[in-house]
Amino acid sequence: MEMKKGQISRISGPVVVAEGISPRMNDVVLIGKERLVGEVIKLVGDKTIVQVYEDTSGLKPGEELLDTGAPLQAELGPGLLSSIYDGVQRPLPKLSEAMGDFITRGASVPGLDRERTWKFTPEKKKGDKVSQGDILGEAPEGNITHRILVPPGVSGTISSISEGEFTIEETICVLEDGTKLPMMHKWPVRVPRPFSEKLLPDIPLITGQRILDSLFPLAKGGTAAIPGGFGTGKTVTSQQLSKWSDAQIVIYVGCGERGNEMTEVLTTFPKLEDPKSGQPLMGRTVLIANTSNMPVAAREASVYTGITIAEYYRDMGYDVALMADSTSRWAEAMREISSRLEEMPGEEGYPAYLASKLSEFYERCGRVKTMSDAYGSISAIGAVSPSGGDFSEPVTQNTLRIVKVFWALDSKLRERRHFPAINWLTSYSLYTGHLDDWYRKNVSEDWSRLRQWAMEVLQKESELQEIVQLVGSDALPQEQRLTLEIARMIREFFLQQSAYHPVDTYSPLKRQFAYLDAIRTFANLAQKALSLDISLEDITELPSKAELGKMKFEDDIDTGIPAVVEKMHKQFEKLGV
Image (cartoon, rainbow, N blue to C red):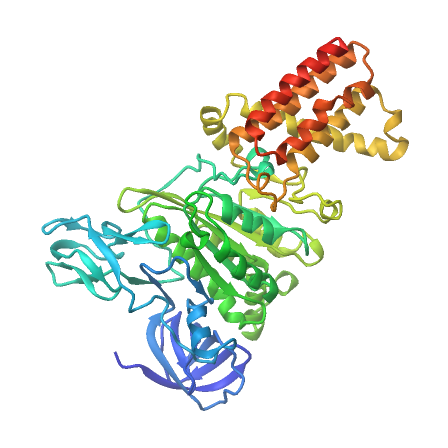
């Protein structure tokens, strides 16, 4: 297809105005001698407004501009896992090999390796009828089996299908109408991929993080926001979820984060071991790195590239966890582009369409029945970085209107070295009602009652703290001092969790239940003891209480908790309970 030619008439940062071409909205255009990649974002009469995904310094009016006639597309096929891409799916290690640490403008490398071969095993045979989303066969990739799909919009009867080693561009299947199907296909990143049916979010995404699973659970196919100020632990929490959540595929979008943070992710992830398979975690991970010093427009595209790759693996029937770190930087990129376009600003200068763009992104998540009748899900966890930790700013507020789980990171908890620094009084999950049945069937009948008990104790502690600040804890009656002690046990023993300790970093659901239930057992026995006029000091000095606190770091924790509870009963019996 011959490309239409035009010329630049005006340049304003990443925004270029061109004349002489008549493209469609969202078409990709190539700009100047270096063929910088841009995308059409506005059409005004005969003027075309383009956002450029690279630095525009050195461009001048009158330079040539070519319309490719196609939108920004992601390449989908074997080879995505273990990859590290920039915002427009250029593989960063390949660019680094060719150019060193600094990427030359206009550099173009395909997203998927064209030379590597993959072993394809067909599932369909000659004469089978296939339609969009059907699985043609499989190719092993990383830690999973890559299912080769019939691209959306394609259907027909198979006239031939081959088994063997193929590159992603070689034909593996031919339909009777002559359509040739290779292992890869392309998909426009701004268009949601089709599915058969959206399902209720009634299965939890198990993270192994006690405060998240027990108090504020996220469903598979659910959406969550982690807002927090500088240093409160957004990135560590996102990394913990990447490592430990029971999603089969992880897409990590580092959207406008600081270079040193992204470097840490890029250097630590390849070394991490997948706890499920013992293989490297990168074998089921795709990293999209767009740091704060990279071009602003590519930051905006990186989120769409990430969700498109997530939808592709969802269509294979996998559960995908998508980490967007952080959506605030994405919104800032939108604000910068919007101001260059001289659009009417909304609150704090963000564009008026901020809310609709955020909801458009989060709505592409969910648990679905795919076109091939499999079940897959995308769970999105969006980190939000409000300036100065102010949760009333527009990005946080608009995100909270859309997502169902709010994990509020708190600077005061960080100062007290309480990690994860998630505030249990301001956080919430709207999935608990949908998930209670699952927890009752798979963990314990008593799960929801135990969670409710823990939340009530923490709420009572918050109310009592106001009195404590006025008169001191010694002035309180013994029952209320016991409530403060039990709340401290819940906070320090149960909610505090070390991401860097080999045992404490991950806590299975049965262990979480046993641990919190042991704290409740102590609380019940302590209340009985108080009613028998045993002093609070005698109760709190029992050795089993301190043992319970240390138990979370022990290798034999699963057998240790019941043993500590047994000791606890014996020690209370000695006190006369």
